[in-house]
Length: 162
Length: 162
Image 1 (cartoon, rainbow over the protein chains, first blue to last red):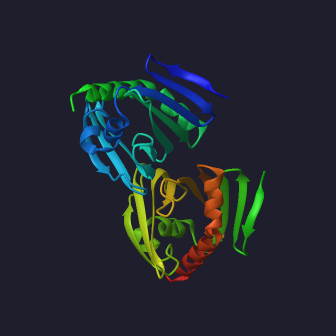
Image 2: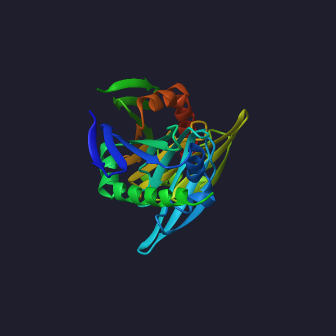
Image 3: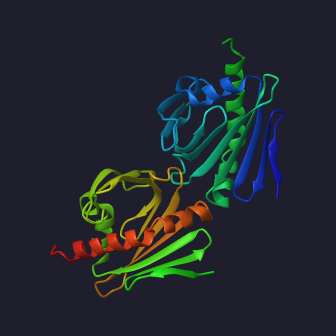
């Protein structure tokens, strides 16, 4: 079963299995720059919060390391956290993801980066939720809009001279 | 499908579904005393580590609160952690469980206590693993022996005058 959940001109969200969401997005930057933007705290703080102040409380990018971000939005403070399972520099990040608003509802996110050879990079992120209800909750909470906003901010960061 | 995985004279371990393990155990103590032993740091330190020194680094028993225990065994140090989803005093604890040796492999454990009315308490713990492989890994790591040792230590604690 592969159900297309939603798509914008740039992001493709599909549901390859009952508890699984797959996100595909292309960035106009080298794999090295996209990898750094995903893993370096000072860079993450510039796009992940979609314009909101983001405090990186923990970001220990190695197997077993924890991460925790706190987003300060106009309507409140939102914490997100998890732990890295596998880290293969430039290629693959495997980590858990949990939002303070639904504590203990954990997904496992596997992000891979592919060098498209023309200066662009394809990001694929596959999330396996603990239950179907957890997946539905995340989709219902406006996940796709949030991702689109974050990735638009990441586009802007990557477009800056470096 | 309900497969009996293993049992000792006191503990009954079954697999009610593909990703699920169920543990049942009766304690010779009131529900109040069993609940305290499950939730108070100074009491947990006396049985959870099965005779090994146990350091309770975090134990915030409320929805969204974190817990983290570090067991100092003769052959090494083992960390365990998670987060509470639901807490209903004396009756029900819902929390995640993760071992440092397999970071990011998270189960959701629901523990309920039933007052048997004769001074005894029945504990039922149902664990939903993220994948079948995670369940098999936990069973293969000697989970049942560890639980039996912990619960025997809990029996001893509950047998002390109070």
